[in-house]
Every structure is written in structure tokens, then in C-alpha cells.
Amino acid sequence: MFLQNLRAKVGARLNGDSEAGFTLIELLVVMLILGILAAIALPAFFNQKEKASDAKAKEYAHSAQVAMETFSTDHNGSYVGATPAELTAIEPTLSSATLTITDTGGENVPSANGYRITSESSNGNKFWVDNNAGTLAFECTTAGNGGCPAAEVEGGNGNWGK
Image (cartoon, rainbow, N blue to C red):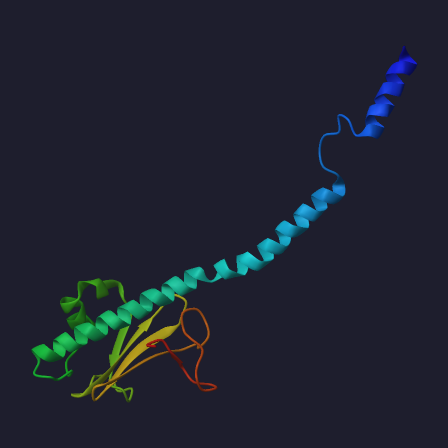
């Protein structure tokens, strides 16, 4: 009886009956495939937080630019006297923005016919809108990083207005 049971078990094993589970090679191949997929997909998600912060800074710069034009309309076409507090009074969503307002030459006050509004994201990228006598430019520091596009000229700033 013992020999018959043993012979039946060995025969079943050789025929592949009652085999359950995966072999070690099959498991290793699946793990390798999952590892390759993770290596491809994960880097795309790593810098999403800084891109979101940069998008917020861009939106603040643009909203401040619209508020600056509203300020100019209320002050006979002049940008002189505009401050972040003045712009926040016009556009309340700017209350949490980190804004700097200068003229396009870097002086501390906007001139009668031009200004530069700079907004800084939480990761240190700066985005600004220049209005030089009606010509607008949208640029940023750290070209090619986060939400700042690569510079068109080597060593230049990125242009986020395109």
C-alpha cells in the first residue's frame, strides 16, 4: 500500500498534476519587469511639487500684471506709486504672493511707462513680467528647471510667456 501511494505521488509529480504556484524564475522575471516600469515612471512624478509651486508663482506674476494695468488705468496711465499692497487691494488673491515691483532697469519704483513684477516660488525660482513701454516679456530664472522653460540663448533666462 505504501509503495502504491508513493508511486502514485511520484507519477502525479512527473505528470505535472497538483502543481500549484510559480517557479522562482517566473517570480524573478515579474519582479524585473515591475522594476523596469517603476524606473521609467517614478522620475516623472518627483518634481511635480516644484512644478506646481512654479505654476503658482507664474499665476501670481500674471495676476499682478493685470492688477498693475488696472492701477495704471486708475492713475492716468502711470505706474508710479504702485506697491504690492496697492495691487493686493485691486486683486485680493495676491495677498499670499511674494511680489517685488521695480522698473525694468532694476530701480526700486516703477517708472511712468514701465515696470517689472517679480514673483518667487517656494523652491526659489523667480518669474517676472517686464512691461517696457508696452512691450511685455515673461522670463524666469533657473532655465530648464521646474516650470521654467529652457533658455533660447545659452546662459539666458527662460521665457514662460510662449
